[in-house]
Length: 220
Image (tube, rainbow, N blue to C red; front, side, top):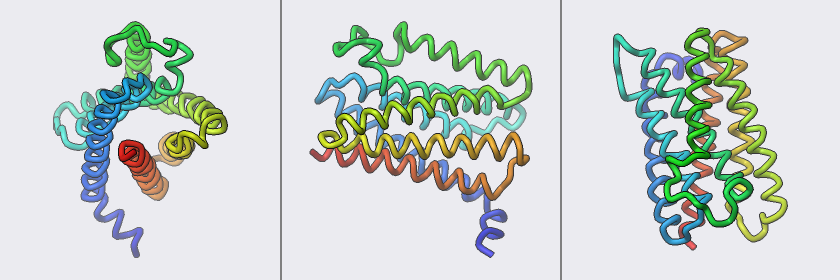
């Protein structure tokens, strides 16, 4: 009965889902931006960028309606989503690449991040030309596998002193699970509605985890 109700009202649920996640992203962006200005911690601004791109992606996907050009909004949505994933990964790696003192004045436009823009463009362009979603799914599965491993290592090393690392690790594992289920639902099960509902719930939990973690950190 409940499952049938969800299927019958899926469009309304999608709007509520997208609006909720967009608002969560907005709060995370504002709070992490304030935290960065206070701490000047470079990793925080890359984390901020990830949720900025996720928020823009959701707005484009669910609220920017171009009836005759829906494929354009889908392409842009994919691009922003892939870039957000790269920013999340880079927020874990930046010290090994840039060093403790970042030489870049901008976290959105610099030589390292430019490579991610190019990679995201190539992934989206090839998926569009080949009319598939393979590269997007495979790239995100690989990306979140790496992010899960790195965040677990960080948690084991510094988890006692930095509680946010636990939320980060759990969120990365859930994100990896969500992308695996997404690939399964789309590539093998022809957009199975039951699995897609589980993915929506997982995504909501992931964004709420980050929100809780960010609020907890900014309160200190």
